[in-house]
Image (cartoon, rainbow, N blue to C red; front, side, top):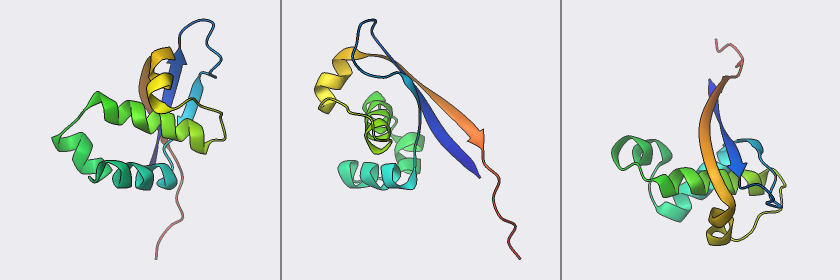
Length: 93
């Protein structure tokens, strides 16, 4: 199973903490409720940068980082990079 993480960067001097944040199931469900589209479908059929940025914003929030409201947070954002890590899963019978 692959766990998607997002590496987030901010303008110099920003009070926001750059780093890598996981896109957990909580983040995925929040995305689907916010945009009323499945994550897989959104990225396969109707890819919008807002989707990537929103996932990063929500992932930071769910990781316990204090973040600004989304539109203010965008003002400090410089980059979001998708990073896939392989996570071992239990064998199924």
